[in-house]
Image (tube, rainbow, N blue to C red; front, side, top):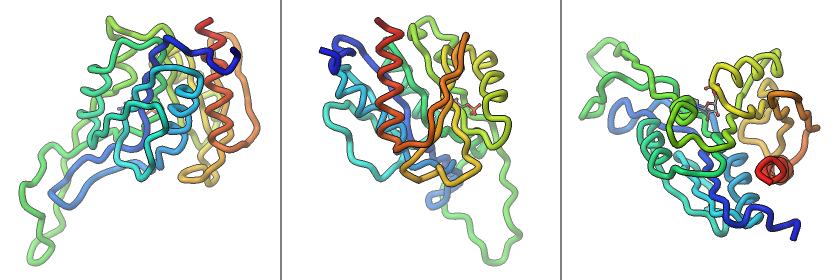
Length: 216
Ligand code: C5P
């Protein structure tokens, strides 16, 4: 029936932030609750897909019927994603940290008696771009983009630059981060589908319907 449109499909989702350790007690992270990615994984599972959810550190329960792989850092996320391919569709919702420190201190860095440390940063792998370039590129590859201005324009540029099929752009200038509602634009090669603000579960359900349409 119409509710089981992804039976036989493998859907890969990344969600949440990554944590890049500085020392045993400190890390660099992006602001991300993981709610939107988890809602997408849940909606795909409800549509009958086999779902692999690669999750950064979040405080969220595993949606029913979803295979969850927990990771901490971007490099761990990249390895888990690679190991989860092939997939019919990959939806990369994670807010991956762009940088990590070049080295991780083995002991907690001490404040007393020393100047503030200078953190030397190095670039993390771009997981989405490497999936796009991979021999196992899913037939439908969806990226997310959090923008604060010129949302559609920047997202259209990102779609081309990252060589993905769709970019789901959200305006994060408001209080979307950690909230329960989201307003997104689904940027595709030939059109833009703009959705009004709605609960993240509804965004997920509509996105999964569009994905089912595209795979059909
Ligand atoms: O360029 P930007 O980081 O804004 O791109 C966002 C998109 O790229 C998201 O889909 C995000 O999950 C993905 N991404 C990634 N690995 C990175 C950085 C971003 O997969 N290192």
